[in-house]
Image (cartoon, rainbow over all chains, first blue to last red; front, side):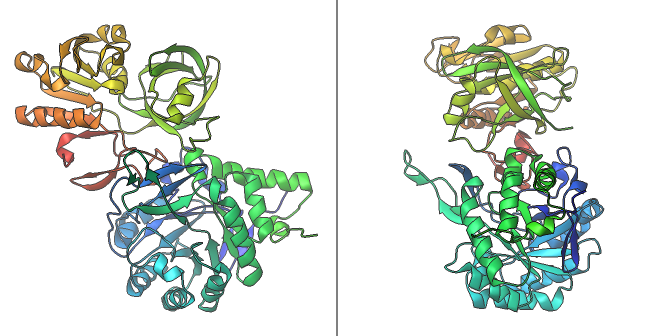
Length: 304
Length: 250
């Protein structure tokens, strides 16, 4: 039996596989395809203090081995989540994390405090890296002072595991991760989407309603892997790796680069059952390689 | 319940810019409503990373087959249309809400434009009552598989160039002056559906349309394919693809 449990501060994952916010709905959408109890956790849709309609259609452009989106955090607000969605999903046999976003620090703090009170939500993922909203979002995540401010403020009101999701749209992601750590983050997850753009040459117009959007999918994996490796070397808190993971071997690569757990995002769209397959595939890899505990893989990159 | 099934193409018919694929499953099919769609993985095309949503043209529960009528639009659908008999096709189904079933004594008009004719056949079969089809194309070759439709009801045709049926758009057809209709179901290009919705509103006829916004997940998770409605942005893949025109802003 391969031991797959991953222990983070105040958060125990039965295995390192989670699903990324914005790609897995509230878990219910995938219940026909995946046994949620076989996952380490699910991170539900980005939630803000107030209802957000998101950006106009078109919100998506397909790219080589990936896609751009500019959804813009459409959600019905944290109170709706607590009253309507939380009761339906709180008893899933996996960790249910909420991704929290905001357009100013007060909004982040108020939403995080409300979720702190929910017994069956063991952690939040603080989204300081959404590239598709005019205010807040990525603006906090691209400077050390911005991330320090928001993480520090949320840390004061949030008492459980605080994961901070980092933007790749920065010069030095390790510095940003260190700032999040210093401000009280319990872990960092990376990467959020890479800012990109698509143009229709026939109409000479941008394809996305917001002109730019976030790139995700298999095409971003090498960038994500590099950033996870850089951040894992820099910080002492656990790193959660994501960005283009589409198979168990992809997941293993992130663990070797230093991630303590991983998230599956866009790949859920191509194979709605992929998250369960990755969890099984990691065990198969360990059996084949004679690895008794998945924790042995974390940071196990052989450099010479 | 939604499933992911590896189908095999057991029959194929090619048209000018479309193909009819008969897909067989080795396991029993889930229950499928008229107007629902499937999300098809496109293997072997580096320009198609995401699945392609395709409406369900026909279903045979005895033989475990579904028919997909696919129009070649871009690289992804071209790859699907080029698949040979015997090829495997990975499909997520059934998706979306489907059309609302009519009442027994409704006078029903099913309007299809171009490839939008596809979902109307299976829906007509599930109704199990006489229906009228009004099918429109730019030209004769756009109108495929008419015998299949004639088996299920009266077929009226318009073409923009007059090469078949009455010349003009579906909303120009003479049946609008003579036929008593109290329910319209429409699927086709956006300008056609907008024109149909306008006629339905003017005449006070109940009307549902099936939309085709660009999708990523197909199951209501990514929120990419939204239509701005009176209730705000709704996922076409999950809340739709079928909407009563009273919910829409056009």
